[in-house]
Image (cartoon, rainbow, N blue to C red; front, side, top):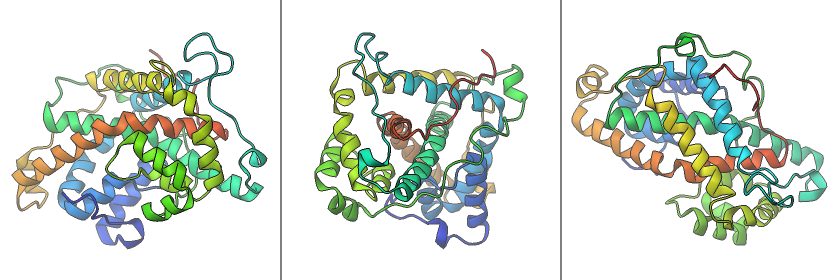
Amino acid sequence: MDPTRQLHLADATGWRRGLYEDVMSTFRAPIVNSIWRTLVANRPHAARRLWTSVKPLFQTRAFTDFSVRYRDRVLGALESGEADGSSDDAGLPAYDPDDVDLSPADFAALRGQLATFDIVAPRLAALFAVCDHALSEGFDGAREDHAATAPATGWLDADRGTRVTVLGSDAAREAAPDAVGAIEDYHGTAFLPSIYRCLAQWPSYLETVWTDTAPLREADEVGFDAAREAADETVAAFIEAPPAPFTVTTEGLAVAGVDDPEDALADLRNTFAAFAAGASGVLPFLHAYGATVDATGERGWRVGD
């Protein structure tokens, strides 16, 4: 599967546009992430089958509880004094427009787009892990408590966030060359993650936040190391017994109109294995950057343990 071949929202028509609209509605965020743009461009019928299978997961109370726990644990590992239990100076910075040399209008645009990334981070974490597990090992069973069957909480993460815009990778490098160079060295991903191609629209913010969060990146076993560990633990607990387990088979793909179901299944497996492997390295940063401009969502609400 060619990851550079993507179908963007503006170019999607017919049922492909409908799938994108359904993803955005279900994820409660005005964004179609690169995983869906890649799948629909390369394996459209397999993508449709997969989305139909995984969508019920995001419509449960168990998932809404997971999304709050994921955000809370990530940010808890990054907050002042909590990363290593001792320092009052550590933790995430907090900015107003003057701190990052932005006009109030530009700062509002930044906050709106970071709110969207904050919404999708736990959804992507669950999507990558659950699909990777379903396509490789499969599930032994489902949760059987109330949260497994009750519908998702309607108000949670609703009516916040704005449509995300991004620069091309080369344009992002030109906008903030030092910061983007350091970011690419740190994350080591094949492509510059979307969050940074978005933030490069406001280079003064990107350069400032990357510099100010250096202590959290450089510390051993605290800061972002602790945030990644917390994220991985939260995801692992969720997929032990997900509220809506599913399987994707060659037979099901053939029924969905896939001409080469065995090859398509292999493509799906490889794609989600790659996304799942890199998710915890990037997704915690989405919550972190949102927190620096007070753009994060609910942390204290609970369905129950």
